[in-house]
Image 1: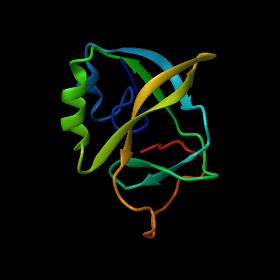
Image 2: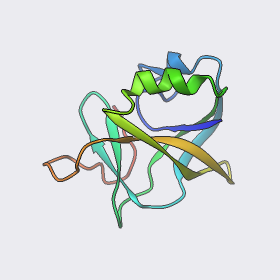
Image 3: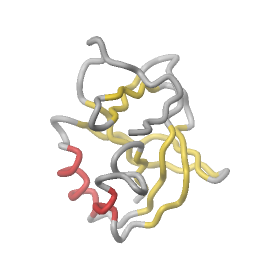
Image 4: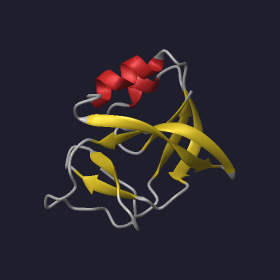
Length: 119
């Protein structure tokens, strides 16, 4: 199973220890620019957004059993939902789970214009 992470689960992120036992495939980005990346302060939140940006992050390969752990870490399904999207990594295309922030982006959020959270 592939998981695309763009915040605190990335290598050197505060929650990366939850991916112990997973293998990093390297820096990655969403194939399509149909997202917005919101800076929530303590972490980012990706939302679907037409004419948005590509989100930059990291792709991991994990055992299927890790999905339950990551769902708990991400507050699925209340705080974050998850969907599969096309991800580009090292010149290859993958399908991967991506956690999306489960809130309406109509509030006064700060959207990160370049699609990469540096928190």
